[in-house]
Image 1: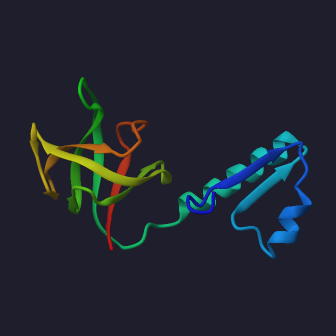
Image 2: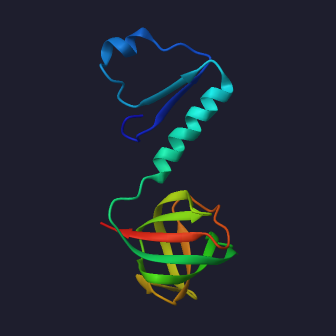
Length: 147
């Protein structure tokens, strides 16, 4: 749990006394409650805090998703136009919907038509694929960061 910065969640259970004895401070976030809606509120608050954090690095480019494509071998791909700066393949990205972060992760595929690209720049139209994320929609905004 520690290496993944995970959250331990417990509903209607007690915290072991050993946790308190072994650690002055628990090694990772622990959320417990006997009331379900309170636990859900705690989880939502923790997720907001985690997703609102900007990635390490500087914002170097933005793109807008125009259309979502289903590609048989790849799955869903975001058809985008770069609106500012540049975006490199394998860069760290955030995807925003209505000014709320819905994804933070890695860009794993960047293509123009069927040609793999290492970089796209302002006004380029391209296809983007993301690591473990396909829930993007038209009008979502992609922000690209470099360390």
